[in-house]
Length: 75
Image: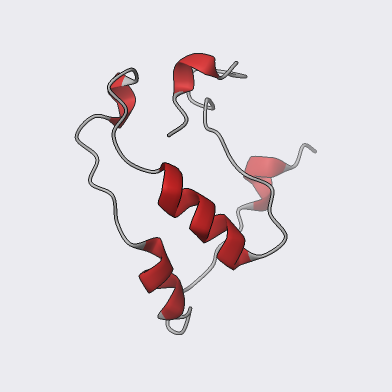
């Protein structure tokens, strides 16, 4: 997996790694491959991998999406 010691954070709370993909399925496949514990990164220890590809096949029916504009926009 990718561990955060090699990530230059904007702040200590924003040190997350992401992938740019064309399709949601591609992002899920990459995440499926890199998730899980990394002994070199204590922030990943104790995390149990989950089957995101299976969850993706379940669809989004019943889910809700929210956008807090004030958190991302300046006046």
